[in-house]
Image (cartoon, rainbow, N blue to C red; front, top):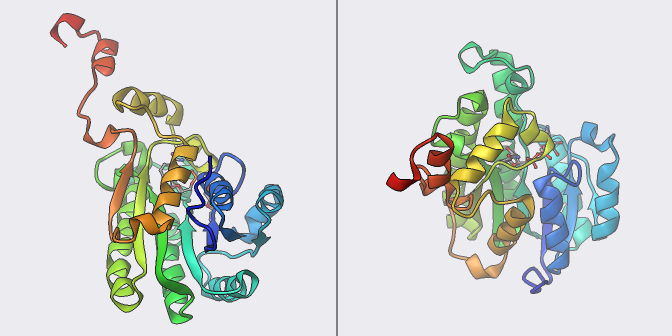
Amino acid sequence: MAYNLLKGKRGIITGALDENSIAWKVAEKAYEEGATIVLTNAPIAMRMGEINKLADKTKSVIIPADATNVDDLTNLFTKSQEVLGGKIDFLLHSIGMSVNIRKKIPYTESNYDFFMKGIDVSAMSFHKMLAVAKKLDAISEWGSVVALTYMAAQRVYPFYTDMADIKAMLESIARSFGYHYGVDKKVRINTVSQSPTKTTAGAGIKGFGDFFDFANSIAPLGNATAEDCANYCITLFSDLTRMVTMQNLFHDGGYSTTGVSNEVMEKLGVDSQVL
Ligand SMILES: NC(=O)c1ccc[n+]([C@@H]2O[C@H](COP(=O)([O-])OP(=O)(O)OC[C@H]3O[C@@H](n4cnc5c(N)ncnc54)[C@H](O)[C@@H]3O)[C@@H](O)[C@H]2O)c1
């Protein structure tokens, strides 16, 4: 069911790789809610061609951009305004990649070139996007920006390796830039800290399947799906949340505030009489 929450709004959505991507679901929902959107991803990701299906479905234009490249980002924001016919009302940063994770390198033995690459792609790209948008004055007043993050920024998940530090940086950029962009243009910037979700980026993490089940049995509501996450992002892009900014918002079925669940205790063999 659609509510026309984004009627007349223009948005840019990064990171839709295939139909499992969280960004894919956000694009579908944004279109259903009345927005017109531009889709973007790294030129290399375009080769898979999946994004064309999403563009057809959402009647959107694709503008490739490597999120680490300021020239690409300048082109993205300039062309998007031309294509959409005005300033951008919402932006989704849904980009994450760690070479250390891909190569299964333990945290304490992190390769620093890979670490730098991970920072550039997954956190600094957010700063670059916001800086380009601000310089071009490409985001409308009261516009809304959301980046996706994970709770390893606050608590240790050993298998998340350097991405934990990188997500902490991403969340900090949302606060710092949120201040400046808020004062200047009333643009609001938040991060959404999402449950483990079965996507290409998620599945690349060692032991992801078991961890997904563990998180699901801790969270009172269970893990939030990509579709749930998309719905939440839509509310943040809408005018109904216009005073929310510089926040890290947990979207995880209650996982982040649950110490332990009876379900997990039972799995550990604790007598249900004492629970
Ligand atoms: N899947 C999870 O469990 C989970 C949980 C919490 C947060 N997140 C975050 O959600 C976001 C989206 O990830 P996803 O799970 O949908 O996986 P995904 O693999 O579908 O999306 C990651 C995207 O990043 C893009 N990307 C990589 N390098 C890029 C570059 N240089 N320029 C532009 N785009 C680039 C990829 O092409 C891909 O589309 C990421 O920030 C991820 O960390 C995921």
